[in-house]
Every structure is written in structure tokens, then in C-alpha cells.
Image (tube, rainbow, N blue to C red; front, side, top):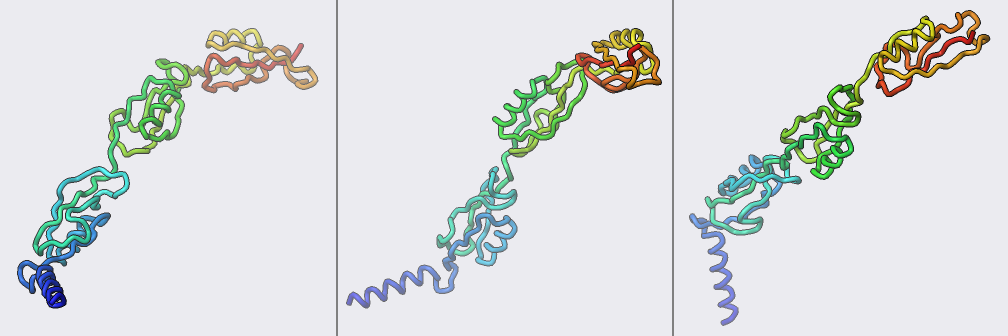
Length: 228
């Protein structure tokens, strides 16, 4: 009697699952997660299921356009022609780039790291408007939307730069005055006569930094000349 009851129950359960080939045929839901939506849609259609996007959601791990989750889940049984609802990745969560212009370079670095952004290249630029070590420009621009860990390039002020005047061949006194008028401090370095036997005394042989170089006026300019 128990054996007959067991067989009858099994037959009823089987008929419930397969529906005897009728409109109530039950289908096991496949795993669609991490598939591209277009691929998952084809898989669902082969099983006579409909795929419906419930919503889009940002994801750090699932590529844009791929499925994050599904309902019903993998392994569930549903009737044919029923719908499977999926959440599709819209890609990584976008972040707004902060405004770093006017900040000290070290503080700008800290802000980027705290926000999950990376420090990109560092460029230098002379600026009359910003003190040395302050950010004068950035790329991408403030309020741009970027992915996490996007490198941000900062341009940092090296202060006001001045061209070193060419004083080669001038008398030392005249050369010193010219450099000082340009804003530089001067350091005189005498060269022994035997090291420059053909040079005139008290005439500038060379300067360091060399002429026409862009330098901060806080730097001293060394003037080399031959001793009398």
C-alpha cells in the first residue's frame, strides 16, 4: 500500500513539473549572472523565458551591460513564457573630481587618496599668482565624473621665474649690477690666472645658472672671473 502511494505521488510531482507537455510546462531557471544582457536574453529565449531589466546599478566588479543578479535565482522552476527579472550593471560608480586648485600639493595628494582617486603626473609651471608648491591647474577638471582610481594630473607652481641676463664678457661690477637689477643675488668666484691665462682680468667668464635660463630669483647667480 505504501509502495503504491509513493509511486502515485512521484507521478503527480512529475506531471506537475512537465505539465504533460501542455502550457504549464515547468522550466529550470539557468544561471544568467555575469552574462552580457544580449547573451542572457538568447539563453532565456531558448528556454521560452522572458528577460526583463528590473533596474541598472553601478558595480565595481561586474562589467557594464552584464547581469549582476536575477530573480528567480538559478535552479528555481517556473512555468514557460514567464519572466526572469535582472539587475544590469551600469559600470563602475562615477566620482566627481574635487577642486584642488589653490591647495598645497601635499594637501591635494591627501584629498585624492581619501576619495579613492590616484595621483597622476606632476607638472611644474611658473606663476606670478601662486606661491611655490601650490596647485595652479589639474586634469581632469574639477567636477568631472570619473571612475574610481582615475589618475589626476596636477600642475604645481614653482613661483615666479626670471630669465638670467647674459653678462658674459662684461666687467664684474657691471655684470653684478645687471643681475641684481633682475632680482638675483650675486656670488663672485675668482679664477686663478693660470687657469684662464688668455682671459682679461675682472671680466665675466661664465655664470651659473647659465645665461637665458629661467630661474627663481631666490637662487643666487655665481659669477666666474679671472683674478687680476
